[in-house]
Image (cartoon, rainbow, N blue to C red; front, side):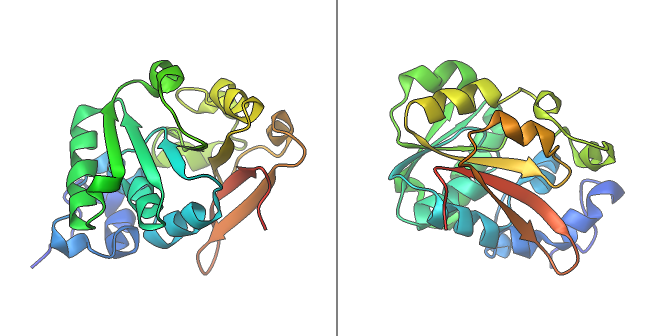
Length: 206
């Protein structure tokens, strides 16, 4: 029987309790580490982003344990999944196998900021690290609070006509959204009581 207590400690318990929302096939052997547990998009939201994001070949710039890459592949897209953490990338491969979509995903161990010019794609999903669960303690979260700052890569993609989805924390500064083109649409993803995160889309989506 799967333990009811998070193996990563008390501070991750609320994420562990929602593990089946993160991956519906969790009990089939989904792999994660602590960072993956609190950073992966819940499955239903990742599928929504995959359905909305224009393009056929998606670069998932910080793929982590593969939640978004798997969802995009399930939406029929070809995915290039890049992560700088070799162990987390290995987990993403295993998780993609569980969902039967590994043949639609190319996994690349690299710093996406360096690998970007060598890759071919027509859509970018970029959800850089927010700095762990304590990100919400910031009164306003800005571009420089990401690690690394994704804004140069986002601008480069938009200027090249590439469709972009940008993952933003709920406390992201409204003022800093002005760094994106005015046509950019921001959608909220919520649970029953609060906004969990936002996604900025360019070009705009319905």
